[in-house]
Image 1 (cartoon, rainbow, N blue to C red):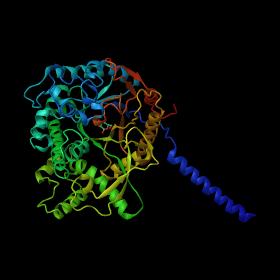
Image 2: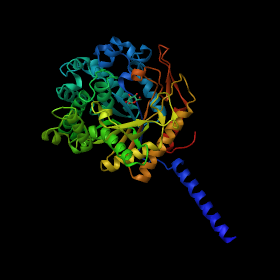
Image 3: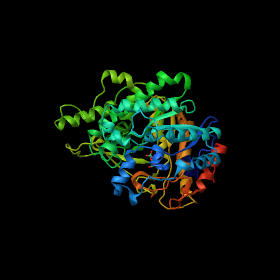
Image 4: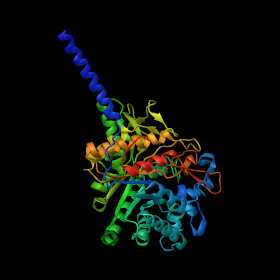
Length: 499
Ligand code: BGC
């Protein structure tokens, strides 16, 4: 009897342990977020403003793409009017006020300020628009968090090569300096580039985002080099001329999925780590440590040599550039949406070139994961916690602001958006765990997005907003979704609760 009891106890203990483990993994972290933790929402100029040629605004690469190559976007949609925030910004700020956010992340349209891209001619009406928006925010106690470049290269500069021309570093520096001068008394938190990955890998590698330039494995790496140097230029300008007076910070926004090894095999564990370094080691490592991660340099150099190139397709930084780059990041902006399973590529094609083949890894998502509106939108909340922990260990515990995170569906006017609420809740719970249990330095969370908007080549088919926008009405009427009230409650209580 005793024996039986003992083994039953063991079974009971095991059961209990399993249940507890299960509960721990899935349990909602209801511990309040710290008092100084910031909750906000995000948008980007081309995705919401409209007014594409109003009041002296110049053409950018997205204006150019939708007008010259309309089939590149779902339903031939354009951002010509988008959410019409150029005229309705006061309504947007009223929505922000209702939510109770501490900050609003938006971007400046370069060609609204500098119609030809160069800093010799400033468009005063464009300046006024952003002054008005910033004043409206400040009057309502909301801090602006401003992205200088959210994918809107002036068309004139694109015609000179855009990111492939190393004069871009000067052009961007001039533009950034102007913005610091014009708005820096009210804006203290700056982000230079939104997502180098899509800018370079998709804009200049795969060529499936504007400017649709296809140069896998070559152009995309030149883009990356000029981009990080342009970031450093802006950071140095801020540091030399503005920081002591304006007392702000300059960061960059990186998009990163979590890359989980497909199996426990060493080769898959290594492949996942290589993949992480391809994303972080190409853009963030240079800004923190002055150079690309060695894993990335070695892989691309090896493949380039096999392919008969005289030098690596990944352009090196000179010693002087390395010094210039190192330590030019005050804060990391993290955009995170989903997770991928990574395995080692068994037979890499030796001739293939490009970011996604140079890493010699295969990525996929599991069909078991809940799917949102697009193929890549899979709900994997634990991924964000693992990613945050990895960033902490890899980069010596940097300051992180979540600059985007959110859920898309593809149903119009789905106001009872319970799946979005679940996404926000479970991702935030994992962020809270990362802070609380893993000691990650996350200072804020910025939900994507305030309202449904122009989702790049997917046009208006994907809805990320916590406000619905009626794109069929000239008024672009905004209507609150259930998730807006959920988020409002989270902000007010600083706690995750059930709705
Ligand atoms: C971009 C946003 C985009 C969002 C959803 C991010 O990559 O910064 O502009 O709308 O993802 O796809």
